[in-house]
Length: 263
Image (cartoon, rainbow, N blue to C red; front, side, top):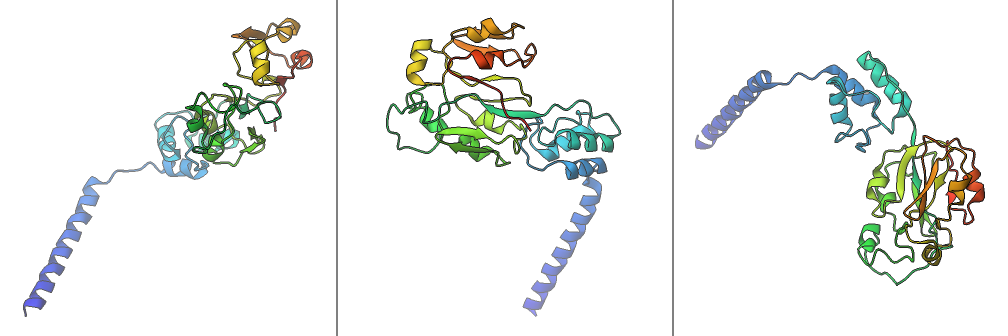
């Protein structure tokens, strides 16, 4: 009889607890705007954070509360249009973004200043005298950017990270992961890019990388719009002024300026 009584008591306790939970759930439930779920369904669900929020769910909630519908970089114009339609608003302009590796420091152009046998990580390698490559400013080639890319858009070949523009969504994860800051997110266009981040003087740069910008100013002098300036021994292009005439590309003696491939 004691075992039966115990079983009955436990069952009753369970039933009472269940009843309390049911009642509590009714009084404490939070109403969810159905638009949040609809927006989540059209977002790419990669939780990359490019929109400025922790993930797609947070962004969906923020849109319902007033955030712009066009902040999903991976989703682009199509997703922005769908989100705007759910909200009954205008999607606004969506400019495609792509990642650019502003470096040409492959094994063809740089050497190694020491043998590295530590963790296969750019961040780890960079802590040892700036990295094991002869150029202290360039891509280290251990693939930290590859590991954080959720779109399989980056690979390392010949010691240099390469971006596949067809797969790249411009989410910015690779840019944040690069300890050398040679990966840039910029508007997808055919405007030229200075593929170098070396700030040393020309003679020293030539010792470090045979494809590095030497600050000769030929590009600056050739630009009809004044869109190029050599700052800190390296050329930089003002994309707002650039008209894509490609004169800078043609006059660069070391071929450190290139027109990116866009899709």
